[in-house]
Amino acid sequence: MNAAVVLAAGKGTRLRSATPKVLHPAAGRPLLGWVLEAQHPLGLARVVVVVGHGGDDVRGYVDGLGMPGGRCVPQAEQRGTGHAVRTALDAGALDDATEVLVLAGDVPAVTPASLEALRAARGDVPAAVMTTRLADPTGYGRILTDGDRITAIVEERDATDAQRGVDRVNTGLFAFDATALRGALGRLTTDNAQGEEYLTDTVALLAAEGGVTGVDVPADEVAGVNDRAQLAAVEATLRRRILDGLMVAGVRVVDPAATYVDAEVEVAADATLLPGTMLHGRTRVAAGAVVGPHSRLTDVVVEADATVTYTVAVEARVGPRATVGPYTHLRAGTVLEAGAKAGGFVEMKKAHIGEGSKVPHLSYVGDAEVGRGVNVGAGVVTVNYDGFTKSVTTIGDGAFVGSDTMLVAPIEVGPGAYVGAGSVITTDVPADALALERGERRTIEGWAARKRERHRKGDQA
Image (cartoon, rainbow, N blue to C red):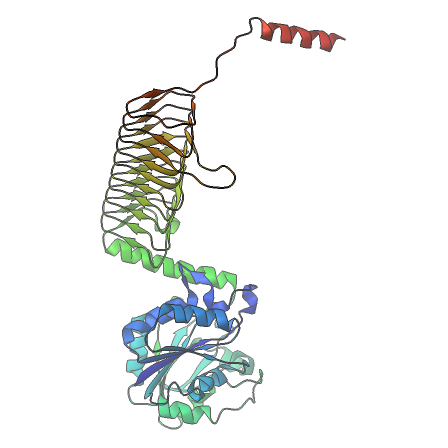
């Protein structure tokens, strides 16, 4: 049986956060989630995640994935990477394993291809190490070799000056023969600068008993996360990888440096993403749709040939050929059917806008059912909240609501009805009727001139 141990017990002190290190998000997915996603294509029968700081939260995340063969094991005391792996083995979850990958929960950019290469590099020797080369290797364990053979890994704090000059470093990712790993872990000591059981010390032990091989990968693929700057750098790598994949698949991304697409987002070929676009959660963008510039969509469906411009939207659906924006806010539960419009400075919440209906500008439509072919004028507000309950406004097919109208819910405007501009409508409007609800105008001749004269005399006093 092939298995993996994912080390996810670290606190991440330099991140200065209450969130467990491996649960910090990058491009829409926790760091740990990226690592677990990378190992998935390998078809491993068992994946054991070693948890420590924030263990309940990490366990909850892993359990929520419903990952076949997934299991969390607590490391009550963090006494080093070797101790963490031994904790996983002692839990009995890997008793029948023949090969064990050891992965780091804070190295999210590793790819399935590199993990496969690591397994292939091990072949039938006891262990293989994933390595990379850095212009500045400060802080990393150095790879020591004898010709092509890896003989040991020495940690920075324990290295000599000559060893610190080595630019080939350990990434924290390994493939082990399970039997050899168990034997080597049992011989680890804490005789080092940090007083911990180093997993890296198994390399010297196994190199002397059958050999250790290595596979080099690009540095950005195995960058770890220890602080906010490193988190941002890793996220940039992941985001660019997502965008490259979309562009290869036929999506037009006008400016990749100013476009942000999360891991779970789907964008169809022939869609266009303009600069400043941010797509989060499970957003879906169909062919022919144009999103942006400067739009942020979270869990939104944008259907074919729709346009979304300068918009913030959450849990909404924009139908085929519908238009949204500019400066528009679609809140949860909003649906625009085919050809509908939510124009400039419009806010909608839990509103169903029928096919071809228009809310062109400066309006609030909340808790509303709007039929087909309706025109809602500028400044219209559905008055949906009385301080205690939310009530629904219904506007029938073909109705026309004049500008600056208040529709005080619960209320129904019948099909084909007209509502005069400036009205405050408090009762239902029958189909095909004209409704006006305004106060009587009062004009006081000369009032303004008299006010100015009183003000002038007051200034002279």
